[in-house]
Length: 328
Length: 302
Image (cartoon, rainbow over all chains, first blue to last red; front, top):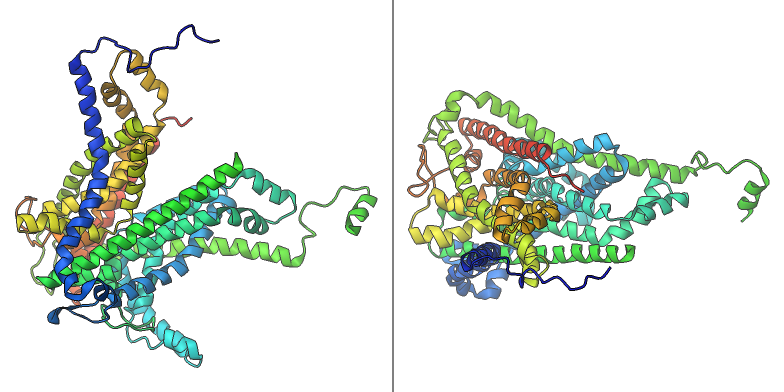
């Protein structure tokens, strides 16, 4: 049935509101738009203000020297942050190697294996893991895990000592506060986020694909391998990248268990430092140019994590669009 | 295709029970199921370890005096005192909530009621997601530069501002999810009664979504209450209770855990455990409250 006349759009329709009411509408619109814009304003301000503050320290070394310099000696006004960049990469990588398979496993367990009743409890466990404050993980890490685990590190180092390549990676463990412990703590902390995104990704696998695999006689594992994982690969990459971003920025837990050394070592059982940990650790005793340099580390950290997060969101979104497109 | 013909020759239907699965395939399936199950245990173990250790070690430090008395000035001194830190946690987090929740909810109103799929709204949505990934210590450095250096001292309000920056994107995204659940019929009914959009939003849409928004905001508060890095950068230190956020140093439970855990003295480590128990108590309380509210008063999803 076609209407005799198209109804006027709400904007044209004068329902008798006076100009004051219209003004209120416009005012409210302006207010909420500004509230939405605060996100962009804050992000912009972070970049501009911290960069300006860090400029004197960065100029001391030049941008390249600041990032690639391997000597960090605040007393001599030498600020090379590569040691911390290296530590951040190594610890995040250890965390990822442990957390990604475990998180995908949990997500598979929740979506495919667990019964409906058990599902709720597992999700609660993961949610609780996400709510434990990072400093509490650090506290347990430094006072419980570190004393208990040091001898296991040494045992493992002795075990692989005859193997040429491994002996430099798993060398002497003089302390439990080292790259590897930091990586372990990071793994626990990024499991919740990778798990929850992976679950969302697995939920987009069409039920028909799964049923088709079963109809072909696939076992559950073959169904997962053949139907779910290829379908979700892009989304899982995005989920892992979000975890990576979280791991690189994690501060306090890492500060407590990494040992705070400024030497680069291939030995994962040696103490080191990360960008975030160095800021937290040295903040209290810093002043002047030293403080500016710490702010500078923050700028690098900000840029890296924003880029990773942006890319990760893009990957996840693109994977989602691809799936929906294929499905409908 | 010989197997096909043999099954056809026998009159009975093919066996689909999986009993004649080859040993290798059956083993792979069984092993994968066990492996996937182990992943859950791997995640549950650290949670159990943390909860057990914090309750056991923190429990022995916990007492009424611990919750109310001042913090000893010397790390070596045994005895209670986390009162100032508990007060500081509540005041800084509360102030952060007062700043972040109104802005966040209004921002969500923009995204869901006004901006919708416009390029600006899409961009803000993406950047809010990106902002949730900005490390908390960077927020602390930012507030240090724009607040602490400007007013010339570290105080509680700086901590509140940095926590607000952390909460803002979480509140925006969770509130937007909730606004999206509000049925469009309600908006149309309100508009048909002659209410302008701002009135519809304030008196119909927001009240309908209020339980979900409250629940999301409580979750953001729980997250902020446990933050340490921005606090140690912006808040300074106090050993006595300081209810004034705008003057003098302050402290929070999370900051105290960090300070005391790094000391080699038994007494300070015990205080760290006690503070951890108090902090986890506060964080879990807000989390449970959030769940109860969202379960009790949820909008019917259709």
